[in-house]
Image (cartoon, rainbow, N blue to C red; front, side, top):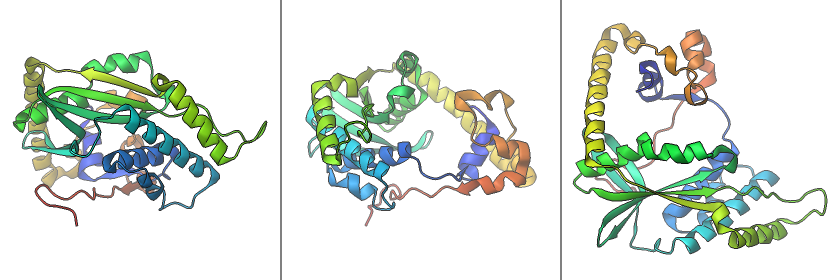
Length: 277
């Protein structure tokens, strides 16, 4: 929707910036894995691929204590609640919801986000009402014949308190206790839940919009057999949106910029209808 060329680089060529995995991605993966498996041991397991540094050891403590508090706060997250629920729509594609709770009044979806306090503003909260990802989830579940009554967007905020290493230095165990006490004492500083709804009229309009976009993609895919990349025209209006396009260097410098990128690894999720071994 933002740029044909960006779609080409990201979804056809499957490119991404070749950059080291930062703290935000490490913590996000570990938190998601832990919630999916309902097991705090998955935090350390998620870090097993790295040579641990003191900073990463602090990250492990932070994710473990946040996940521990999450399980205590959201007590319905017990065995039997569906985690990682798949949808597969011919129109909208394949995706996963973090969870679905089935109640007497219908299905409630859950999406979890681990967020930095510094990246969450009042404008971020207002934007949830028109967030595209949310309406896509509602539309996909309706198309699959399992409509949602609402979606709960659960924001978990990373700690702003860090381990003391200079004045009154503390051990990792002491930091863990101080952090756990802070989370228990001010849980609303760490957790927020936003109830989101979408009307049938909104979903109908979204489906119509997606159909138009899919037709444009199909036209580009067909044309690319003849003119390759040029079939996906650039949209210079989107180059600086949302912090800037990750593929701007490729648009500007062409093949000279390729060393900055790598091909994304494919998801290890099993194809639809199959079970992972």
